[in-house]
Image 1 (tube, rainbow, N blue to C red):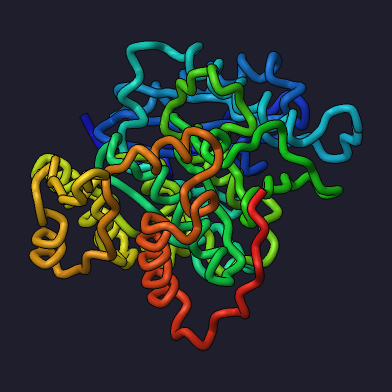
Image 2: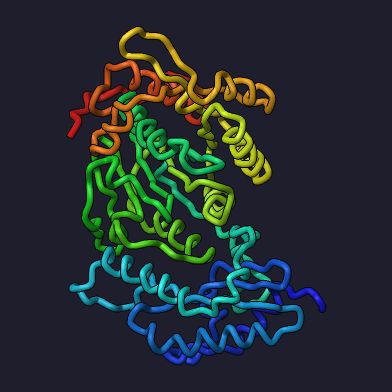
Length: 413
């Protein structure tokens, strides 16, 4: 079997016409998120939400056309209905509602695809390439870059596995940056398990600007955007790789972030499509990796570190969460998950240990209650631990202390 190429796939898709315009899908730049691995192909077709019924037949033809190519063993095509048709001025449809419906339609489209073709998007999600009518032209080299001119530095908070407290850490670091005088934002990019709405005590659909851009929610002095604002909390997100990429791109490109000194991105756990999309298409200033002290967690954290290094994203250091438990009665520290693992591993891998966060019920309760510990107990020991890490991160990505704005007095909501 010969090896299929992206060029041959785009050439085949030029034969698939949009019934609304009579033009092919590639010329209209409707093909996104193309991934090819070992003969398995996955891509998305961007459509007007109001034409989703008509475009289902187009999706099937696109799948069948690519499947007929030599070297293709499976194809998964999905409809992404997040664009609005040009000139559609229906005021009753807010952009936030359209975004939510579009993303739900993407999930429905994934479920309508053939179940035995799921391997088609188990590849590195950063290979999005769009072809213009000229054929060879590629936007942004091999990646379509997402520009965020109003944001000085974007910092990813990542982990190699779930359950290490990454979201709690990211949230408190963003709040700590704001308390130190930086204009800070928090992007909850964990598509499968968005937690920012609950942790920050906010909900509801985001407002929309006149040019159809989503306005972040504001809580505890920072700007916040999350998939949790667009889909119901109890609705499972069952999406394939290209749809995850598209959702993350929307929350970066289609959000009115304004002027920020630092945007903290709460990454989904692992090293899959979402991480690669952010790492390869967003100008990340660096990544901080959250781990716990035991060997198993550190092994997964190492995978995250090496992934970022492979895509030339600076690793700013490790954050050891649940580092110890301090007895409230005697004050003695107990290392529940082993001791010193984060420091040793950071030294071995040539990075630094940014800080150690204890295992404490107060951190959990304040986060679950929508009033994180940095906001609710800003002068406490836990908040100070987060503050020290945030200061070091800001120093690395923004420069010396003198570049900091004068810290305002933040009134916690």
